[in-house]
Image 1 (cartoon, helix red, strand yellow):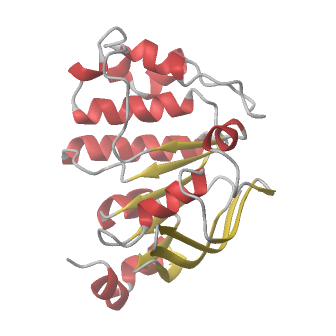
Image 2 (tube, one colour):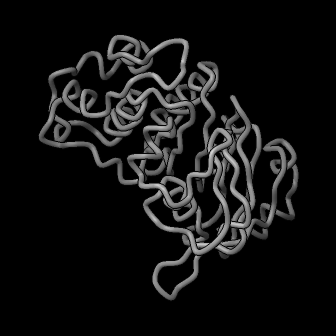
Image 3 (tube, helix red, strand yellow):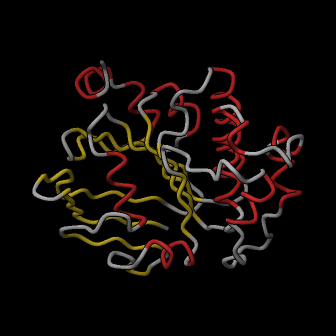
Length: 233
C-alpha cells in the first residue's frame, strides 16, 4: 500500500532523514518508533507532501506521490492526522467533520457521521460542541474522525497517544485496531512502546534519521538490546 525507498529530507541545510526505506502492507498497522528528534514526524510530513524530499521515492497504491501537493495526495486516498491535531476550534464537531468530507476512494463502504459516532460515541454526544470546548482526548478523536470523512485507503497518525490519559490512550488503541478491521492500512509514529505493542504488526525504529531496526512488533518487544539502545530514555 505504501512504499518509501531511500528517502532523504531536510529543513534548509539541516538534513533530518537519511536513505529511509520502509513499507506498509495492505490492511496492516506499522509503527515508527524513536526518541524525540529521531525523524518520525518528518517522515510522515514528507510522505504527505508537507516537506519536499531531497531524494528517494514514495509510492502509494503503486503510484509515485513524491512531488505531489498534499491535497493531491489526500485525494488519492491517503489520510493524515497531525501531531498538533489542528481542529477548527470555532467550528462544531459536525462542522469539523463536514470540512473533511470526500468521496469514497474505491472503498466498499463510505464513512459517514453516523458510522463515526458509532466508532466514537463521545463525539456523538457532543455534535454541536465547538472544538475549543473539547478535551485533548476528544480533540484527538475528532481529528481522526475528520480524516476518516475523507474515506482514505490508508492513514498516517502522528503521535496519537501523546498527552492522553492512560484510559483515553487505551480507548484510542481499540479505535486504531477497529480501523484495521475496516481494511485501512495505518502508519503511526510513536514514542510509547506500550501503545505500539497494543496495535502494531510491524515496527521500524528510527534514530538520527536512519532506520536502525525493521521487523515484527513481537520481535522488537523481545529484543532488549535494541530497545535499550534506541528507545530507552
